[in-house]
Length: 249
Ligand code: FPP
Image 1 (cartoon, rainbow, N blue to C red):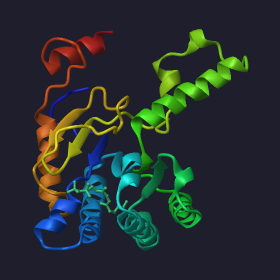
Image 2: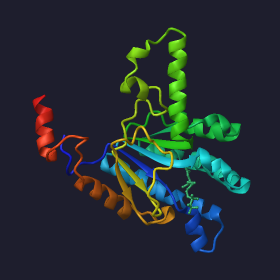
Image 3: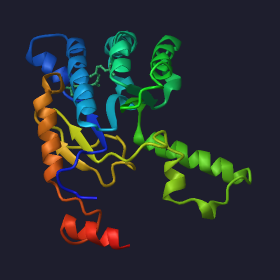
């Protein structure tokens, strides 16, 4: 597998800066979230066009419940509205939606809309669009540990058989490839409790652009940067040497 000129199999994006974008334009923060929908359409279309198999978007962190009730309410409404309005185009493009996170805290209405989106896009085979909603990586890891411990305590699982594969299968992201590239907008340079296990070897790309301004060119730029990175996964040598060694195994 060559590490150069490669399209990532899985791109994950921390969509940040909606609030600052709105403030800079003298608008309500919620308008920033509304304006954040168009770049989502753009990255989905671009991902499909490039043959990226999986795109994960951090849309609502568990910490986001701590925002003012009016902002949380506006976000919930936006999720409901978009789940319905975007469904036809997502289906046309061959997109399958999958939700990760603790969906139990959403209202029945939000949950039903999101689950309908998952259900009605199951045939999408070109791109898996993963929406991280009420997502916390630490909560995901604790949940996985608890599930495995419960299985072991019930005598259905030998603790000695727990390896990385088995553990990954207990995460919300079970069955998905690890992200190759994580992009964060708005100039912040941290992961903020996002895919901490899964992004262990991901390339990180940070841009100053605020999410509502994120364009196809910005996405392409991140993909180009990814293609130029040398990914060695702890090995030594040029990507070509690593590749050759892998093939010899
Ligand atoms: C971060 O910006 C963004 C969010 C918390 C919400 C992301 C939601 C969308 C892009 C809207 C639509 C989503 C879907 C899935 C339909 P921020 O508010 O933290 O920005 P700030 O750091 O400038 O305050």
